[in-house]
Amino acid sequence: MGLETSTYVDGLNIANPAATDGLAQADDHIRLIKTVLKNTFPNLDGAVTATVANLNNTTAIPSTITDLGISDGSNGMVLSTDGSGNFSFVALPAGTTDTNYYVTGGSFSGTTLTLQRSGLSSVSISGFPQSITDNSQIGNGAGYITAASVPTQSTTTGDVGTYAFLMRSTSTAVSAANPGSTYSSSLYYTDRSASAVAGNVTSGTWRCMGYAAHLDRGTVWLRIA
Amino acid sequence: MTTELITEVRNAQSMNAENTQFDVEIHHPQYGWIPYMLTPWDTDTTIDNAALLELIGSDYAPFSQSDHDARVAAFERDTRDVKLVLEVDPIVSNPLRWGDLSEQEQTEVSAYRTALLDVPQQSGFPNTISWPTKPSCL
Image 1: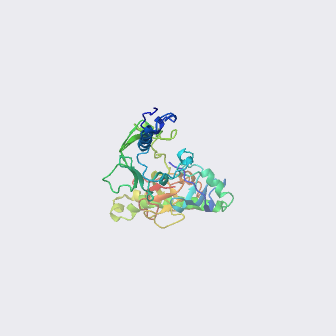
Image 2 (image 1 turned 180 degrees about the horizontal axis):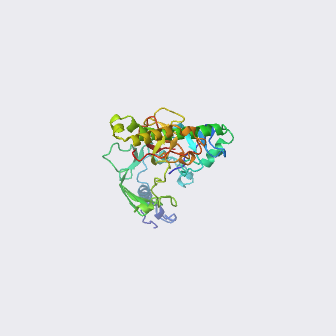
Image 3 (image 1 turned 45 degrees about the horizontal axis):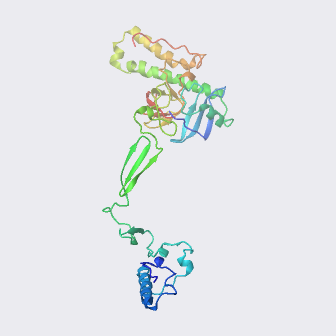
């Protein structure tokens, strides 16, 4: 009389039917077996070719995306989902109308730069120099400018960059000193009241910024070197 | 001011017996080859004169006392010429201004002019000069 009730294979009792059961119950057992087989494998409409190893999941993990049943795309494409479990490769959107893949904004605070991304969480990059807040920070500090001094023009008589009213001796050249010409010797600070040459001789190189004719007429000179 | 690095010099001429002053050409990074007077009394540090002296080394024309004396003499002649041009010539070359002077003043001016012209003939010229006194009328 043993006839179990089962929906799937695991519910079958291998002890049924008992050897003493009547033959009239045989059809009940056959229908039970067919029912649990169909319930357990509802979609097998063909031969199952998987091996025992396949079914026991002892094969290697799929190494390519195509092993997962997803058709490969072209270089540069990205994997996209339709939200229903279907994946496919699509090309990145062109133009500026779609910013799903781009940084949409950013901010800088302290030493950290934060970038906002559409559809993704923000990313932060720290370690940037601090913002310069006053002129005292413009200089050569530890990794960034912290202080600076404005270059000063010397005002010492005779230094490079200074002007002087000089006379050019005719002792070595009788030609006039034309604007823009340069000389290194025969230029004197003297007002002609001193007779010592050495102390009145200019140093370096001077550019004539005016015009000095013969007979030692003075003019304005700029020291350039 | 930044320091200009000079790496080339040429045609150095010693200007004193101590060989501390030179008239030399330097290859300036901005201006190219330019004349340069290197003096021990230079206060500017734009060009390292000590390094320039090392660069010149012994490659220079030696100091010439006669050339130096000639430069001093020319300088003093220039001084004399300026005095003549600025002080004397405006009077003696203008008949009206010359005529306004008394006979005594004209004599003083003439003597002053002659004395200026004779400065190079002084025994101590050019190192020791007795400059004539300018007349009060000039």
